[in-house]
Length: 245
Picture: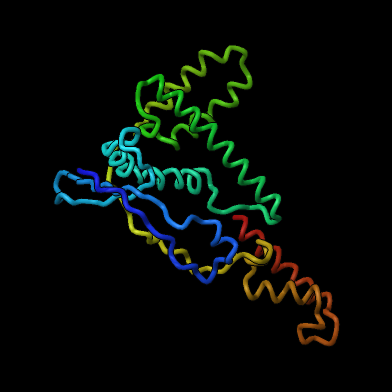
């Protein structure tokens, strides 16, 4: 691993989507530092990666630090997975803009609190915070929060909670990357746009219900007789008993 000289990159031509005022705010050139990193993994060929950064001071930001930071870039993907999958932030429930902002803020506050818990647990166990499972820490916190609210002495239970968070360690897998593809395809069913009961109706039962509610729209110009209504009612009762059993 060795460091290349500092390069000066000129400002490119203004793209069509950028305004002239915004383009003028950018500097005419920037200085970047190039570091070539050699990655050696057991069972694989050694490869070299060129890392470009604007951290120009080689004394404050050494080559080894930049190489270690580059090899941990997968942690960013894991952090996004914790927000979107474990905390179910991939689908926001609110519709109005201010409600969506409040929902995002609530997720970020809860996320930072869980990360704070993981940091304290890592300090107690003398390990790195990224070596502790986020999902296990969140589940531990959810299970112990009702107990914390019910007791007076919190110190002993907090110690137990920190120890529980360190029980599930995360393996160290540097240089990992995954393709941007979906493993499982979604089901080809339609969305539920009607009440659940309407989706459960069979074609025959749906015809009977419409015959009672609006018989004139079903091609019957005359009202239903008592016998016909009684037969339809019996059919509905038998259907509901069949669904219940």
